[in-house]
Image (cartoon, rainbow over all chains, first blue to last red; front, side, top):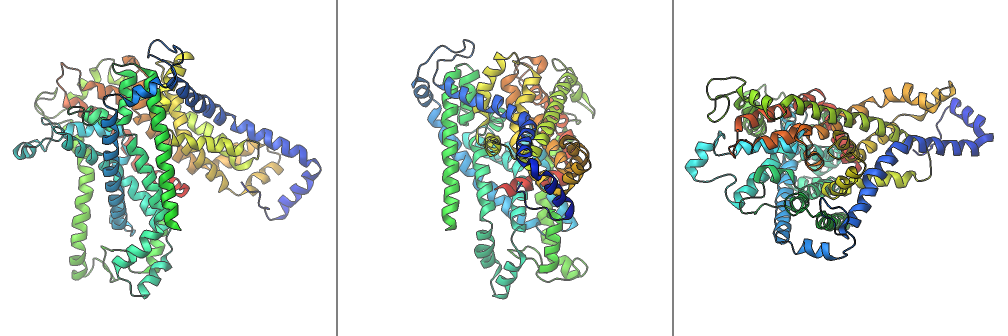
Length: 310
Length: 304
């Protein structure tokens, strides 16, 4: 991207030859660049920028699912969204789920990365088996665990029955069963990200710590963790964003139950838009709120990680 | 890449560093009795963790062909559950074809657009280049649902409601941040001398791209294509919102709907069969292209 002088006589010759028409070649370059970038630009504008503007307009208009635009009704959609009977519950539940998932996934991802970071045939096998679930779609994984958790088809059914618990029967059981599904599906993914981070730490830092007589725990706490900060920042942002927007796992596995205790914010958007209420205006308002919250939360996280650095 | 760098480091640094669960003492591991005794707990523990990860997959595959009351495979082993799946509504072939169509169209569009876009961003200076690139990456920041609701309205207006082409267009857009980014860094890793030499030989920028650069960025293209396929094949929310005709459902949607069909009684056997059909291409592709798969994550990690 930076036109750092390519060494060697051939390119020097080219540059010499092109010098007279430099301005023209610059304009030609720009034209060619735009031609190659046109498909990207078309997709980004038509399927990203325009919908983003439209969702803002929808959030300010009365917009039933089948009726289309019925004119402006400025803050009403937003107040309806915030006053929805599931709004507070879904926000609290989504935050709770996000905290639990993020803590578990990051700890397990880091632990598994430390476990398999040495390269050997056995560890390559381990890495592959940790990573296989992440090739599955979230919907497929949720369906898989839907069967695995069912009281009829599950291989764990006899055990569970004797202990008198159910996987999806009570609000807490449903939450933790879903968290287990998510850990199963994503732990390998976070392990790989952590491995990349661990490998970017230069080896001589550890050598130095060792020759200073640091114990393993000391090395981990005061060498590995601080040098892993960029990776930890990235994984935290990814994990928080993904968990805040959870949908499939709850839509398929718990269907929001039992007693509407596992409704996430995105699920609420879907319910308002397409299930029963059929109000795209209110759903758009809620989407705009979620977008704003997400941008704010990510900005705060990045800032926290950056200020820690100083 | 992961493997290489860790191997060289291990060779340089000798015994492993942070909280190691591996013996500190270098030597012919596994050969001496003490070495085996030291490593056995490690093998047992890690092996058990691996089993936790593999068990659900293996169990589903086995259970889908095993006898189970309340399914089409009530006694004996066989493919009764797959027959149920095949006969469900429009038939599994229909849904497989729909999913394959959406996935292949998404892969083709993603490859074409990110190849051209990556080339433009890496090799040309044009006004608006940085804004367009940042705008493409910004897609990552916006929740899925926030975009799908207006897209539902927009696609209705242009006559792409309830259309698999519409779904593929939307999925392609969601793939663009990752694929454009990856293709840009792939092109930037190729020395400029290569395409300049081609241009000296009289190639236009397009034929330089096709003849010289495409082979050079092939690994990037494989990674982009693999991720686009996995995302499109598995996507649930876009077809859920954009498709409402049961003839045009994709496979994940069909299998999810299959559950509540028979008077509220869930056919777990058919669901297992559906999960197997859904997971099989993903697992096979993963095993074949593992290196490209991991590389995709790595470039994602470098971005942060």
